[in-house]
Length: 112
Image (spheres, rainbow, N blue to C red):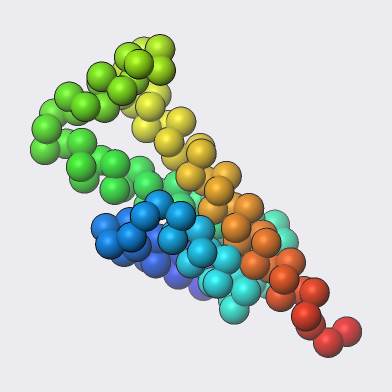
């Protein structure tokens, strides 16, 4: 339940808000639906990574990857696909840590 919620919320927020709002959504989703720490981290990582990949491809395909190729050259990457992989990794780490933080906050306030 956690992964699809994070994926959907971060994809929708990617169109409307800045990049960091997806991390807030991952935090909130893990706060509500989180069961285990590893599941929270990997759900956040994969959910935001896939959302960022989808959003980047939706913006890059119409212009035949012209901007992505130029940005990849600025960062000394061989092609636009490697730029996409780096983007997914950075977004995934931010999402995974946000979801893990949400789960830890939930655990801190549980009655034990």
